[in-house]
Amino acid sequence: MKRTMKTILCGILAAAAAASVFTGCGSKDVKKDTKPSRTKETTSADNNVDGGQIYEPREIWLFDLNDEDIFETGYYGQQVELEYPTDKVIFARYWSDDVEWEVYVLEEELTDGFEALEEMQPALVNDGEIEIQEGQWIYVYCGCNSVTCDKPIGGRYKAYYWGP
Image (cartoon, rainbow, N blue to C red; front, side, top):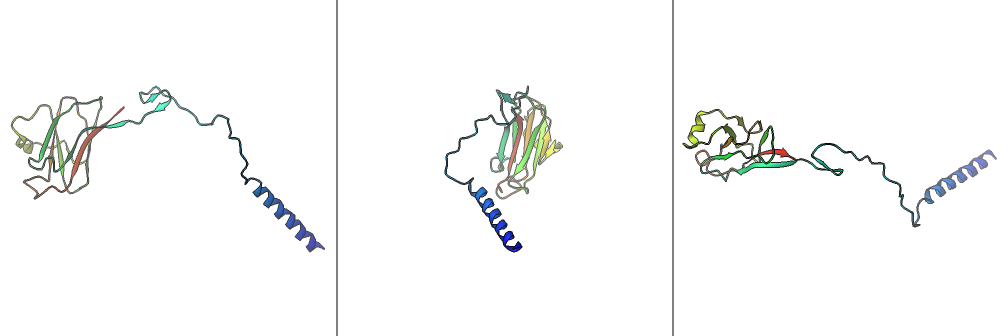
């Protein structure tokens, strides 16, 4: 008798479990919850927040060079014009770690040619950050040029900073 009672109880429990599982599955239309969500909206006094919308800072390029672009001379120069104030400019090489890039920062434009840079110490070699001010001159030397290589090997070098 005990065995029959256990079997009946197990059958009832199995039927109840199956019924509770299957009652949630159906094609009935379910009304969507119209309660407000519990997500927290943050606000800030930063310039990056506008009416609750948060904006990521954007990458502003000073230049983006391929070694092909400066293969003949090996050098590139430009006066710094900042779209937004910044305390540092980030320099990074891409696609080829075999190419060495040297960065020089000068107060005045080179007028006698790039040869003067050969006697100076670079402010940075390859990757890193430099404090640069509006109006300074940046000169970049690419180690893969017409004097040192037969052809460009696909190196890329970029200078950028973060803006609003």
